Image (cartoon, rainbow, N blue to C red; front, side, top):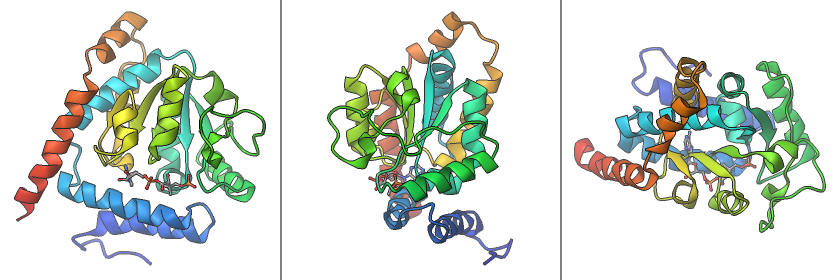
Length: 248
Ligand code: PTJ
């Protein structure tokens, strides 16, 4: 179904349709729609725009990913349905591997998500049918890990639950999280949290990464070292609280 161009909620409805189509195509898990609804509520209170503190986090994250020795971008069903081309563009801009990581795992879903990413231009997609390697401390299917995640120094996670972020941190990795809920465990446990909609965050990070592409390590480090994640999360939370007042 196409939404009329003059519909006041067109952008939001188009995003919803990408998810419902993803559900029909076996990309998105049924619970992915619920997760999206929660994200939408936070986004509504943010004004459905990237606030300045999110832009700051996106810039620092781009620098951190560029400075990483072995960065990896992890992709679940929602992200594959919402922004496959943007995943590929970011991974290419920062030199990261792409790995499928699912909570509601099935080999069929992993393969379909790989196909979506390859169709979007990915050269290689990891994490399909991976066996043996795991993230220690996790009992869900998310524990499965392929070579890029095991070896990564910086891991980008989007729309995930907090357990894996915690375990990845315990492995000594830096975790960049995209999560519209600044109170979530993922948001609080990540090294660097972007409180923004993934559909806006990824293109912005790619733009920053392209602009910083020729920077040396020292300059990149300076761009992420001063970033205070806790302070930034407090700003995001207070903006969302303020959203109630602005919407009344
Ligand atoms: O594809 P699978 O099998 O790996 O399953 C994926 C889901 C999304 C079902 C699974 O990871 C899940 O249940 O996630 P949670 O625990 O509901 O967490 C999702 C988080 O992402 C919540 O804090 C939401 O607010 C947030 N979120 C939802 N949509 C967006 C978002 N953050 C950024 N951009 C969004 N579009």
